[in-house]
Length: 138
Image (tube, rainbow, N blue to C red; front, top):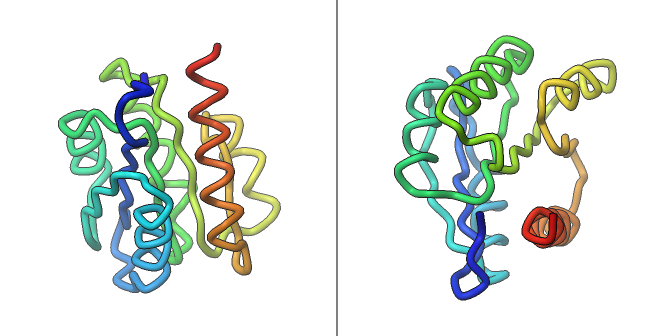
């Protein structure tokens, strides 16, 4: 759980084989500029690598960028691994090319929010700040 005396800690990851990371880097920079502590894991991260890094870094939020179309295969595995590690309190968000029809199934497995193309960095920052605040008050 997020300590009010430290910045929000966000792990930004690119799961799967997708090698395009410009958007993830833009988001990481915006989060950092908003005062968050950002851990960027780089491209081609396995679900195990993402979960392990999130656990080691004691993050409040995991933000993943997926453009490969593998979101329905990769994200359930990550959510399962997080659950197995007792990390159900970590807020998980995803952005990228995710069809509208796939958004609710992702939310049903615990993804807090799905951000599509054109979402502003301000909207993402505000969502994360509010979600962390809401979780701390719960």
